[in-house]
Length: 283
Image (cartoon, rainbow, N blue to C red; front, side, top):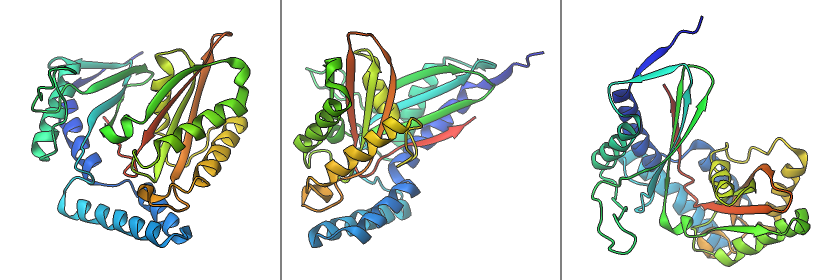
């Protein structure tokens, strides 16, 4: 016997509003640990000074409930809805948008969304959010809010690579792209990579790769080795913290793969800045 669990969408709104604030105020513990580890290993005096400032900045943001970065980003919301959940009380998508409105208003977070890409009139409440919804088994709802700033999001790409490029060709492509991005995405960065699928799915894989716990390897040994090799080459680039030179250009490389057409090898890259912002909750 299947028991359907009712969830009022007002609860969705409350959770999204809270996560918008938490993601912008509170640096994830795993990121702080990575910055401190980088500080211990960083040889560049200027690089060390930058890392110390990033750690201090995160402390102030947490204590004073202020944004880690003034660019509080596009609100990207990932939702997994259990198939045994019955949503009541209103429209599900609108409940998420209302949560973003409230979160950005209550947290005094910068509103960065414009209505039209050409007229550039601000919407005034940071909506619409970008929403990705997956239906999964169970009777729970998992929500992840991942604010994405313009500096790091602009350093993204998708390329339909020839399958003959193979592993080495894809590794070169990623390393060279990150080198070209330089200081623009505010390093030390996290590099999300999506390989496979098709033109629209590879970038989503890359963005989902950024949600994996920092530094957690891909379960496929071959892909894990790719992650290690790419990270090593990126950190040999000398770009360093905030582009001032040093050893720590990237904290992690996360790759997600998916089956693809025999004639295609889609590769997408999506970079997160040093704040690597995302928070999640389960209802």
